[in-house]
Image (tube, rainbow, N blue to C red; front, side, top):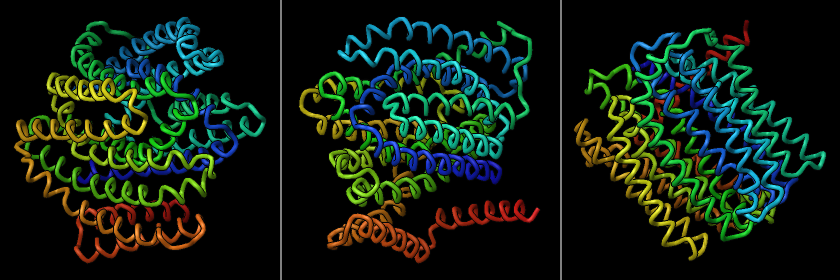
Length: 482
């Protein structure tokens, strides 16, 4: 179990470091580019994200879930993935003019045709990530991800300064995918063999197809909001909505992405020890809720001075969307650990049923609220996420006897600390300071309250995080001495 949570610490470090660099770059780009240019990229990414599910979800999950996967399995799935990515890119390339016509946007088509090349890199990258997860090589993965993020940042900012507009955003995305593949080729000891077994691939496709279908439904229901906003509202409004969603999504993906990568592999290896799986889920729930609740609460409280200082006043309309998104993503805590157990233990059909019901919630809410304004769409998303969380809770009780009162008990300490943070920072926000000073004051106040209460209550998650930070710093210190 120590190995599992040490791996989680490395993966989380990778996510935080990469997201920090991405955040700084996004601040620079948001100052250089117009909101409507972000709106164009948001519409393009709807279709690329949906296509990307085919090459990053089902096949790779099957590789990790299979207990005895070997080089032949990985090579077979690699060639299958690469072939699929070429077919999907060709479909996107051909359909791009029609998609541009649908949005009545002539510049959308060439951007989609170029950025669609991302699928080819994603196909290779997804198998590399499956290998990393299988053998928990997260240290090498962290170094590669950070290096790739730095390269993509340089490409995006350089092109923005040269006046490339929306192409700067496209270049940043494309270079990130390409560099991730390149650096992982350098840092991990896996290469596809000149071997392919249809029998092996077919065996894994059964489980993989279920996860693929579930992932596809999740992605479509999520991207449908962007599609509807992009169709019925203008690019500028879409940019505000997406920008408001971006920062809380970045925080939640740092935690949920870490847990998905590490816990899924751990659950797969503990398929015959349900008691161990329940303990992993409980620890995951406590630690992820501590991180997610406190960070999202803090972000919601400092949203206005943060946007005003970082992105300038032209982006202030995104503040209420950001605050609603923080509340919406906080509900993911009860879903993350449970979902990974569902997949890792091989209950693919149960996961598919949950995803179908969850997608139905999202689509129904969107159909009802699509023409009532973007704010109504955002609030509806929060409501459906709460329902989805309760749905996953029901499954964890059914199969792992993880009762709802146990789950709420595990969440309560983080929730109380977050409420204290909100109470203090909201009072500080009333001070007559300029945006930069107010932002710094609110952040310091929130962190101070979090640390004091965590230490006073001897919060287990707080001390676990401190222990992992000490380990990480000691490793860095040893490397510096060498």
